Length: 93
Image (tube, rainbow, N blue to C red; front, side, top):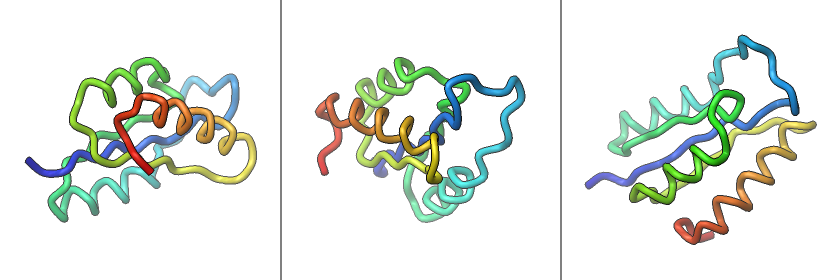
């Protein structure tokens, strides 16, 4: 089985717009990884809850998790979610 990589685009604000922009960063990286033999699952935290993301990570043989972020408020959401991912015990440093 190929490695399974989860890529996450973190929220950009506490309250999101009803039509967020396309998260090109994880789409580009995901397409590259898939073309090079990895299985890829993409999540947009602006649409998908932390609970659903963490449930997926805990329920599947995830080998890698990546978060795309910019400086500013988005990095806070990325750090919070990365701590929760680490607490699942599924992903090591």
